Image (cartoon, rainbow, N blue to C red; front, top):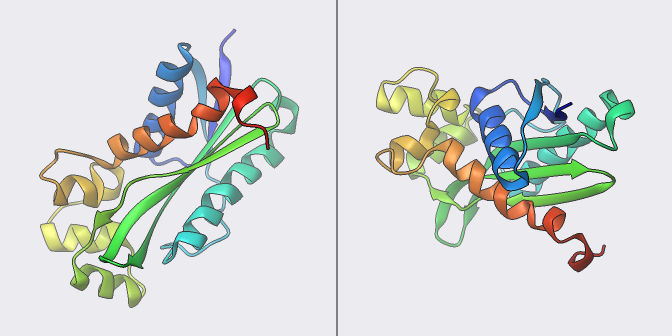
Length: 180
C-alpha cells in the first residue's frame, strides 16, 4: 500500500514539485491528494513573515482535515510571496513539510523582481497575472511562473520549489541530528 501525500494546493506546479521531491528523496511513490486549503494570509503575501505563515497554516489545515492519517502520511504546503530586501524586491517561497509529529520549514532562493512589477503588487495585483500581462502569457503561475519568464526558462517555479523541499527534507533524513 502506498503512503499518502497531501498537498495543500490544487496548483499542478506545487503538487508536482511535492510529489517528485518526496518520491525521489524517500525513494518511494505516493497516493497524492490535492487539497485546496486556506493559507490564512493575503492572496499575494507581501512579506517573508506572511509567506512563511501561509505555508505553515496550509500544513496545519491539512493535518486538521486528515487527523486519522497523521502517523503515516506526509503533508506539504508551498506559499509564494514577495518582499523588499537590501538589493530590491524579490519573489520566493516558503515550504512546510509534516510527517509523524515532525515539521520542517524551508525557503527558496530569491528571484529579483523589476520595481514596476513590485509596484503592481503593492497596488493589490497578484504576481501571476502581472507577469501574464507583461509577457503576454496565460496562467503562467500554473506553469513556469515569473521564475521561468525572468530566467529564460533556465529555472522554473517547480524547479525552485523542488530544491526548497529537498533541503527541508534534511530533518526527516537525519531526525537524531535535528532535535527541537
